[in-house]
Image 1: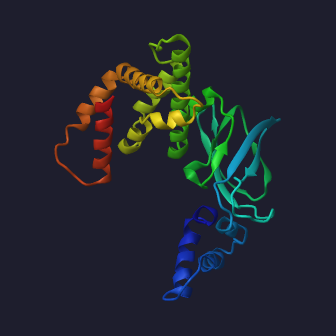
Image 2: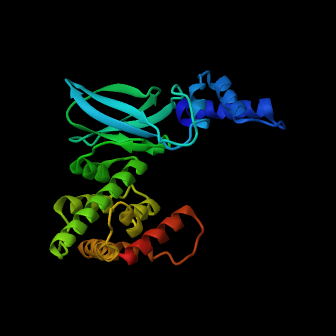
Amino acid sequence: IHTLIGKEKFRKGMDKYFELYDGKAVTTEDFVNAMEVASGKDLSQFKNWYSRAGTPTLIIRSRQEGDELVLDIEQKYPVTSVKVSEDNVLLLPFRISLLDKKTKEQKEHLLEVKNLKDSFRFKVQGEVIPSLNRGFSAPLHVDYPYEKSELFELMSFDNDPYCRYEATQKIYDQVLKSELNLYNVTGKLSTDLSGEFKSALEKLLSDEKIDYSFKSYLLDLPTESGLAQEIAQPDFDAIHLVHQHLRKKIGTTFQDWFLKEHDKLSGNSKFELTPKAFGERALKNQCLSY
């Protein structure tokens, strides 16, 4: 609701909620009603969130038509034991941007996905890469066929933390699966990081706009157990070996950066309970780990 109506109207909605219902027994509908009164926005379709179980998936495909990029979006719902009518369609606030491949500029859009199938058109100049569900604007799964080169671009340049993290995790996942496949076929481990992967990691590490805590999260590889769950017949020993080998390659390739950053972050000997201090300790330990 905050995403749909904005910060100021949401604040007014909270004031109206307390004005109308303070000290009373209330329902979810009462809360939504206060938001409708304060914002003037019809949220009746939004209430479907409270009667539909399961996490929805947005299947998104893009196509170019002249100077327009078209995003075709389809809502899919998981089969659950809770029966709902066919017209129980969710209202999804879906924040996106289009990353210009050449200039790296991004323009953000807030879409309201109201139908099982929707299409949205955007004027574009040159090639762009969709950055989807920015800020985790809706709790859903996104199905979009990114090319590997597009994920590297998002990993390197996306200015939304959630989307940058998602792209980075997808790259890690693909690299691990590729190296696992190589090991299973040849019995050998690759010796070096690929040029694209190394370049994207360099940009990530050198980006001083990223706060310390988030950078430590960006350096977390997918877990071995998570990787095993995506494989039909997992070889746990092989997964562990490949996982550790990738960590070692990253640590060796960027050893100078990790050592320098660790030394810099070790300079503050005073223990503090602040977000900045938490981040410094998290990244320092991540550097030490690598």
